[in-house]
Length: 243
Image 1: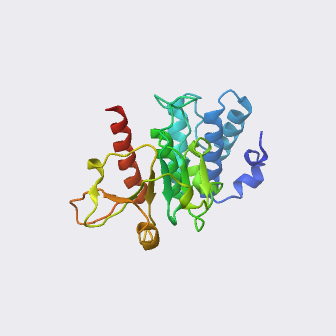
Image 2: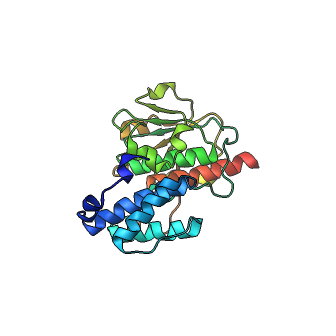
Image 3: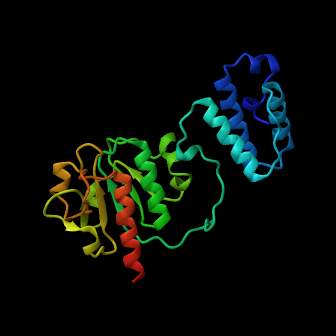
């Protein structure tokens, strides 16, 4: 058992209550993945006795409920990668064939957005994802966490020369004369270009693109989160390939 899950009573009781709950949630996350390891259950039972709370059984629902109770009491905000890792209906060890459509991310700042793009690219089997040189690389811990493990399945490059990417280059941007994303036929291969969360695609990059598509919106806000926009376009591309 890893040392991070082993405490003396004196050390554990000296922790603030929020820290105690944080440690318990981490131990339960490990236990959820490795329910056959009795030493983890024994360690958690020991912590329960020190905290004066009841022990739990090893069934899925009991672990989930207690995990989220500890997370809530610890005061930690819950990001998606904090959820208990489980194989949901439809998950498979190997996915289908890749479409061969490339995606170029131009200066994204948020590692959460990059990880979400990787997850969507893998879910629809879109193709490789390329990160501009001024972005964090794909080995950044937050990118890998947010991708929910899919980063290892997606071919990802950092700082690649755009001229090596297949044309046409299709910018996804909010400009007035752009084609609605669902009225454009996406050829294979091609390259999707997504821009920065603040300024969109850099003007120098946008000028080099062959066409621009946009997602028509009717709300007060005239833009979407970049990862959400990518998911919408990726879904349309996948739908076109099935027609």
